[in-house]
Image (cartoon, rainbow over all chains, first blue to last red; front, top):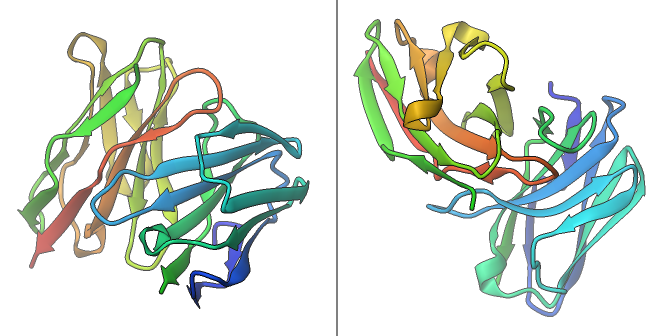
Length: 113
Length: 112
């Protein structure tokens, strides 16, 4: 048990739907991350939050909208996605950002039809 | 520029034989380096981490890695493979700041 949970574990959505991914960490960490894992590609860092403030946005399309209401929760709001957005979305947390060890959740497997 | 190259996309070893998973990196800074393992349908788990202390880093489950600055390498090794080691392995470089760069992964198969 890594202390980082993600819901739902699987999600199928149409291109016109709006859905949200949730991540929760029970480790007392102050930094949280969203990653995208596509087949045959390196993990792509999408967003970084440090003490609830967004500190990195790696040119992610606006159809992905993160929200971090507190240091324990991180959301990824999805709207008008494309089929190429289908992937495993991983959440991670660390005590602080900046080279610290990250602890990963099990991921949400997303399929966009 | 920062990047990570995992030289083998797939490695097969027999149970009880040594494991070598290769990783080369490029970084403009003195980076932190990590190895993570991902079992099917699971999140990534940290195996070990290098942060400019000892160049030989010991991790969990008998894995270790050696940081070689002259070769810009951080290869992962284990003396004797176990069936439970079959998984996907990721080398990660983190320069200063909030950035983490992952390799494309190496799939390890352990043959009984």
